[in-house]
Amino acid sequence: MVAIETPRPVDSQARHPEPGVVVIPSVNWQGLQTLYLKEVRRFFKVQLQTVWAPAITTLLFLVIFALALGQARPAVLGVPFPDFLGPGLIVMGMIQNSFANSSSSLLVAKVQGSIIDVLMPPLSAGELVAAYVAGALTRAWLVGLAVWVVMAIAPGVNVPIRSPLLILYFGTMGAVMLALLGILTGIWADKFDHAAAVTNFVIQPLTLLSGTFYAIDRVNPTMATISHANPFFYIIDGFRSGFIGISDGLLGQGAVVLLVLNIVLWWVCYRVMRSGWRLKA
Image (cartoon, rainbow, N blue to C red; front, side):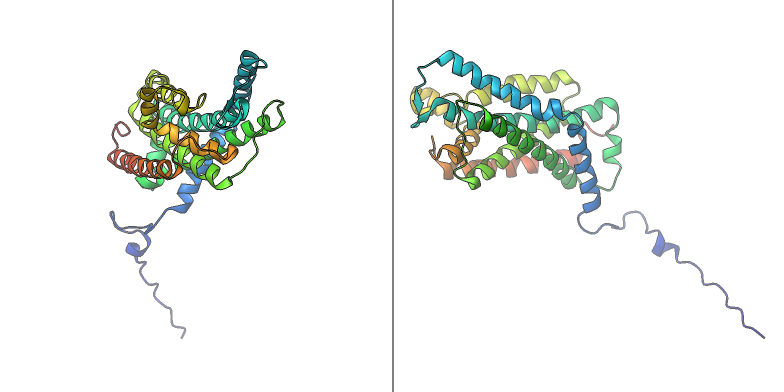
């Protein structure tokens, strides 16, 4: 006789863990990569608007200043004014687009009701913040590269790279800071007017009063004090020094200030994202 084996019962607990059991013990790298690629593909589909339009706008800034100054182009920090202005415009476009990317991504998802597609997958609050920041950082550097290429081929401005480490550090720190501010804005805002208000009354004034168009040593003491209290000043000054080789402030102090601010903002974003405030109905 042939013995017939009785099938063993399937251990359902091994195949389907009980609720609350950790299935992904560490970082969900696949989910993190998926959300990051979603963010990149979202803005890259309209790259003419999100990447190349800022480059053209920056070139127009340079043309306007060149026409306004004419032949009388003063030297600032020992370099021609267009060379002083160029790096500031590059990083200004980077940080503004970093803010726009993260804030618009969350706000559009909330308005369209698709935010549930982001909250339902097994992604932690830290992974969500990391993916949104990485997407905004990618857009920022693409914009910066596009603006630099336009300036490199444009006549009348010279933007040679003297210190790649300074450019990389301050450009990244600035883009991360604005990406985190964009996340907070996207979570807080209920409509596009709210995000526009933050852009018009917070981001734009801090950017324009950060020393992009002038040197701090040429303004009155009150204005210089205000500029040194502006974190955007450290972003632009450190980034610009990587091109012209001269700093308008203290690079070490600026590097530490930006690092501390980013750590604090990251913690705030993590806590807000984890709480589900204005995200979960």
